[in-house]
Length: 115
Length: 111
Image 1: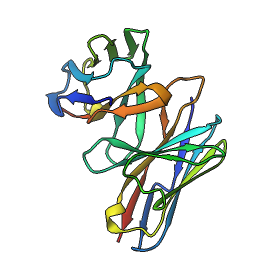
Image 2: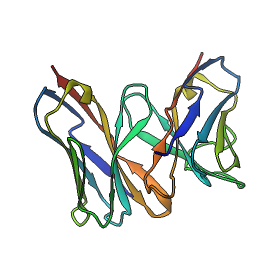
Image 3: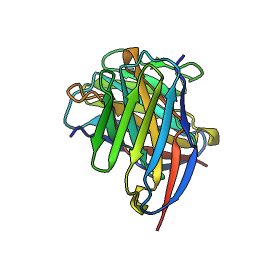
């Protein structure tokens, strides 16, 4: 079945530094990938839609200069949290839709802790 | 704007019970509905995908139904096991592949 690989699974960084999270579709091409954020005991909230070869579309309230998204190839999207602060600590998950399957496939998530 | 609600928010049952998780949505113009399982600190695992033209899907001990007109879906788990303990998320697709999640049901199956 379709697999989305996300790395790293866990990262701890100092306040003010930047962190890059990678999302790869392993056995299919994804012109569109989605980035979600999840706070403890809450559901997933869509942050942005990543489009291969063009600018990402951000949801209302999500700072595009804070959360930089690059979708440079059909199998890779990256989310960079710039100048991270403790309030950015969260669980970030990416997903894509393999066209033949019709359903979303999710990565395993990245636990970001900013200290 | 699509809103998805899941009831109950939490559920604790003894092993072996059959149980039903509920999902309701406000905008019936959906393309698909998908049920996921999430273990603590992990990503989402797809359980069942129901196309908008379908009424139900089955996989092993799981059965999901969809009633678009009433804006409801149920996930039925037969003969629950401790390994079924997880959070179950319902998500609906609208136009543009927009996926809206419910708040989830945290299930605990006690041995």
